[in-house]
Image (cartoon, rainbow, N blue to C red):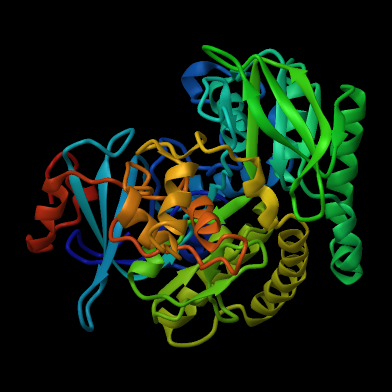
Length: 487
């Protein structure tokens, strides 16, 4: 803890998933005062999401793998002096010249509480995770269509299933984990529909050889799918959802190499729910608002550009986990620990645990190589827009159809997502383009080179006006030291 309530923390960690927990406990064990902020009521992030204690789940670990690693991080957190600020939704980070960082948050379950919080810190670690990427198709707004990650979150945190008979579709290894979890929990999963294939990994033998644990994970999921009689269909996609008030069936269509639907290669599968997702996109708004450099990823997303010690292009601001590119929980833990060591070294004025740093860097590089292979293997191809009809809603918040976006491109000359937004309102709703931005950019490009998504947004989460007004107030006592009082 800081020496006094008016002193800044040594390190503010934003995000209490694998990367954030590893960074926070590592820094705290080296003597740093650490504040750990997260929007959820519990730590663990999306990967280790688990039921609230009040639900009385006897074995929350049953739906996870690698639970022992999380349990160890949790034990270290409980033994530490880390200030865990749950239910804190960080909406921006600011810094005055030569002064500490100020992390601004709003509190409450969904961030709509009227209390604004400001946490001051000498250094910051961003471990904000990722969004699920969605590509639209006819019927995707029907009740019963949920994100693949969302379906897993419902199960892990609420112990509920999205339906009794659930088709899992999209692209990426997350689908296998979701399908096995749903099947193990009692859902009937008639099929996993993967738009890409798995042969693409064979083009990266070094990455595979260096990460044998990934092959073991794949074998475990494959065995589980066989045990539950779940069919895996590659090079296929759900191209339409059928139903009146909710999902009743889906059309599955075989795709060519560019993800274009193959004529006459469709069939229907009856189901009452669809769990769908086309990979993940790094959540980097806080960093890009501060001017941090980014790098393009092979799957079409943008990630933060980081140095060998996880520091961003802005001095004193580190990042770990999915913010640097989607790579999974094991990679996130290594990067979080590395960032915690680096932040401590910066504050102490000399490197700490140099041998451990080198070991973590080797492990990180090895797993990053596999993450790069994964991004290439599951990158959406341009032909997916062939799934859309004119009436398909692309922007759900503003109810903007594919026809409207195509008219903006063909009739009014729009060539990028920003111009489409100005002409149609696509991306102006509650999610501010986080859900539809990738799809709108593809439609604007008309199968040409897709412009990188505009990740720079002034607010990372929606905030009340009172939170904006608090920016001009002087920074004094730490708000977490005086709960219930606006900063």
